[in-house]
Image 1 (tube, rainbow, N blue to C red):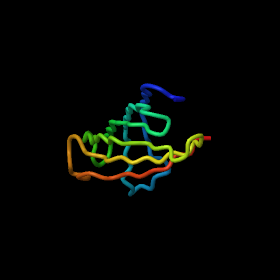
Image 2 (tube, rainbow, N blue to C red; image 1 turned 30 degrees about the vertical axis):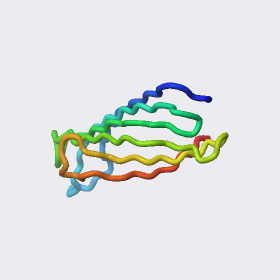
Image 3 (tube, helix red, strand yellow; image 1 turned 90 degrees about the horizontal axis):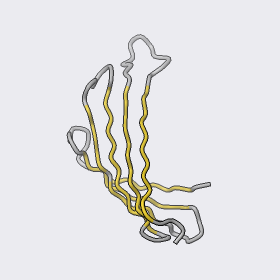
Image 4 (cartoon, rainbow, N blue to C red; image 1 turned 45 degrees about the vertical axis):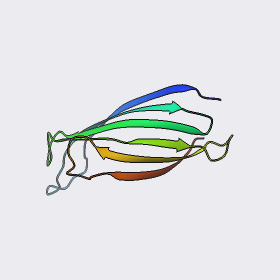
Length: 110
């Protein structure tokens, strides 16, 4: 097995809209993401993430939205860097934005 054990990743994003028209809803936003990935085998990785975001100004200011998307990443061909990911995103605090959603993604590392 090439990779073993846990892989932890976290990041923060701060957005500031630019080049807005005077009648646009300009708002700043901050978001956090933390993920834990466990290398089960050469072909399979299990992961769980936590995402949270909030508006700092403008509409929706001060409201936090967060979700926990557990998932799997599968390497269909050994030795290839292509991976297919599948996760189900479930809101933690407020179901106002969505009840749940399914995500399918493809990753090619180069």
